[in-house]
Image (cartoon, rainbow, N blue to C red):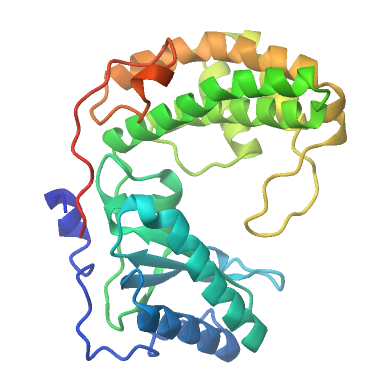
Amino acid sequence: MHPTALSHTAALRRPPPRVARGVIAPTPTLTAREHAAVAALIARVVDRDDPPLLHALLFGSKARGDFDAASDVDVMLICDMDPEERRAAAAALAREADDVARATGVALEPWAVACADLEEGWRTPMLVDALEDGLPLWPPGAPPIRLPFTEADARFCAGCLLDWVYEGGTEARAALADGRWADAARRARDDITRLATAALLLEGDTRHRNVGSLRRFRRRFVQTGMVAPVVLPALAWAESAYAALPRHAGEAARLSAAAAETAPAGCRLAAVLEAVLVPWILDRMRALPGPAAATSPAAAPPWAPPPQTAAAPARC
C-alpha cells in the first residue's frame, strides 16, 4: 500500500483469527435489533471470506446521527480484493445483506470497498466523506479511518467525470433520435451535474450532490466571475430536471416531467456548458498531480490530457 495511505490505515491488516466474528463495537445510534442485524451481516461476511473482510464501519445518517424512521443502516465493508473484483463482491455482499434483512426486518445497505480504493490518487469524495463520518464496527477496538481528499484524487475523479460526459453526448443524441426523450434528458442533466462536480472537486469542494452541486457551482464560479453567465441556463435547466420527490437510499435521482418534455433544449444546454467548462477543467487538471483518467487510446476523446504512466494501486 502507498506509504501515505498506510500511515492512515494501519488497522487495515488482516484481523487475526481470534477476533470474534460476530462481535462489533457498540454504537449508540443503533437500536438493539439493528446492532444484532449488523453483527449478523459481518459474521456472514467473515465466514464467507470471499473477499476477506479487513474492516467494517457504520456510515451515513446512522453514523452522523441525522437519521429518521425511514433511514436504513449503511455498512462499509473494506475488503482485501482487486478493484476489478468490486462489482462481483458487491453483488455477493448485497445478497448476504438481503438474507439478514429478511430474517431481522432491518434494512441494510452494504458498500463493498477494495482496500486499494484508499490509495492516494484513487479516492472518491464519497468514500472520503463516508470515512470521515464513519464509526468503526469491526474488528472491535479498531481506530477510525480518516483520509484527505488530495489534489491527486481530484484530478483522478475529474478525469473520470469527463470520460462519462464525453460518452454522454453520443448517448443523448441516440436517445433523442429514437424518441427516448426521458433517457436523453436524464443523461443531459447528469452530464451538466458531472461538469459542475468536476470543477468543484478540483477546488477541493467535496460535500455536495445533485442539485447541491449545481447551486454551489453557480455561487463559487459564476457569481464570482470565474465562469461566464452563459452557463446559467444550463444550470437552471438541470436543477429543474431533478424531481422534487423523496427517493429511497441507493435509488437514482428521479427525472422531472418537465425535463423529459424539454430534452432537446437540455441537450443543447449541456453542450454549451461542456464547450465553456471543459477547457477550464483540463487546464486545472494539467496543473495537478495524479494519474490521468483511465481511457483507452482508441476511445480517447479529443480533449483527453496526455496519458501518464501510473502503477495500479497495490493490494493491502
